[in-house]
Image (cartoon, rainbow, N blue to C red):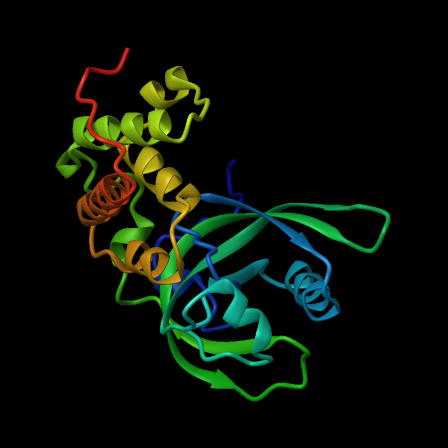
Length: 227
């Protein structure tokens, strides 16, 4: 999914953005995230974003798990999130919005702002993540074979169906980031994947936590090559 706006660096993004706290949700640069919006405060956030620059920040509450996040009205936020642009939206007819976000770049919260809006608004800084604005940065350093080998074992252990031809055609950045976003891990693991310094670091951590999970469940190993 393409983006009509051009974001070449931090200067192209707003310094104040609405944030959507969602435990277990991971958005990464150039990744695609579908959202089903139904709470009034977030419907208002989307409406305001569509009238403006269409940028919102996805960020996780700093909690142990998603259940804890639901019990707290205004949970503490992690310091780092990822901004996305609304690239698609549709009204459902029953009051909901179906939204697609395309990731732009990670940000660090400077401060949470006082606002009359029903949603949370933060001053943010994108300057710590210049590589996020460069598509496919660091791809050559990713051990693609290791990523695919681990993915194959995970798919086999969980009896999943997967389109291997699409996987084979995916560039390393798209492959690693899509697998990280779709991974079934918890809040802390998703945050570590977000905060990984480089694409290689993200790939290595994804492989490590997947191998740990496979070993914990006694799934064994399967090092046969992918077809």
